[in-house]
Length: 273
Ligand code: MF3
Ligand code: CO
Ligand code: CO
Image (cartoon, rainbow, N blue to C red; front, side, top):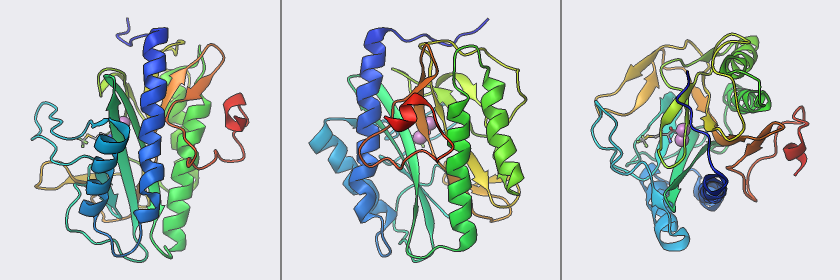
């Protein structure tokens, strides 16, 4: 039996709006993500844009899952060996850094959750390759989404691609169902076996957000209660979209004018839209 909610048409409309707005925050912040800026300034700018321009609420602010302290900022900024949940602060971005900005907005009660990688100046070939392969991993996972497919098919597609390129998949954090609740059933593992797990049905909405490490998959937790780094200090990358299961396949909800195009191998109807 599954606890995965099937969204109503009204829910889906709400999630389309929240998703687009979440993506537009990333569009807005892009020109500011340069050497010399602090992660705290990026947080301040995004927060201001959400509240003053969009009329959205940053979902992370004061978010407090069981066992955590309230998250203190509006966005997550994860630099270099930070896998996820980096807290914005005084850190200055410098040439060669890679940074994930993870944005979740709430609009009319609905959550739009997405993240992109940004490369500062001239990153190493490894850093660029890690970001590109992680982006492909996310899209290979998305391309599996179709009624009748199973959650393990998504994880398998992601894992295969990461491993083929010598990278590892973080296991402690995963994608998630999303709607009026930020994190709900199901968990979307970014590894797994084909033809296993829950069967996808039209109206399900969840995120796909692989965290891929250049080195080993093990993590370590920082004392701030949130920041997660690679244990071996290798680089880590992540991309995230919120996705609706449609009658025929998928609809990515977190798209906007500035979204990078899907990789060329993605040929679904929406890829061209
Ligand atoms: N946006 C993250 C996700 O993709 C969650 C961040 S929780 C926070 O699920 F509290 F750290 F913001
Ligand atoms: Co998410
Ligand atoms: Co997110």
